[in-house]
Amino acid sequence: MAEQEKKIRAIALVAHDNMKDEMLAWAKHNRDLLAEFELYATGTTGGLLEKALELPIHRMQSGPLGGDQQIGARIASGEIDMLVFFWDPLSPQPHDPDVKAVQRMAVVWNIPLASNRSTADFLITSPLLRDGYRQIRPDFESYESRRQLPSVEKDE
Image (tube, rainbow, N blue to C red; front, top):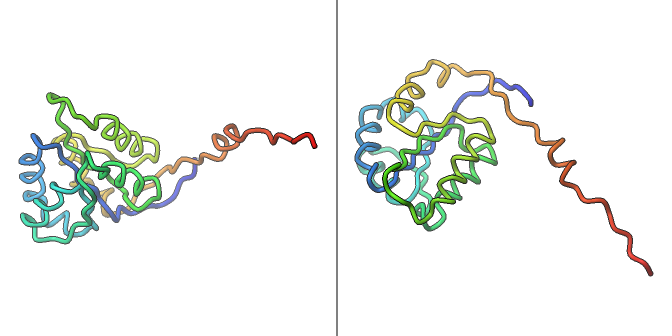
């Protein structure tokens, strides 16, 4: 694992339908702090946040239409540095594998992940958010080398 001094630049905001009001309340309360960052969000959540906060938001597709996967891809590529995902633990989600996948990407790439308002409050007010921190970015070289299949020579 490689350590690097890292400053959070981009935050993704995602909320399930029953959690959108909670996300909006949290984001409005933290509007001035959020304004310091590049913001990403899935479809409907992004539209609601853009209107409520009057801030530019990079809007992905709706979660069930691939938005969660788009956020996950941006986490893996290093474009998104923190994920605030208010998911609904009491309602089944038809795209549950996608929900788990985006959360998995946050864990795999070792970025801060908040799944409820309390954790989001701790993250958004942390001095590490603005002042930089020693992020340990995973080095997957050994994993990649294990996955490489031996070459197969063809008989001619």
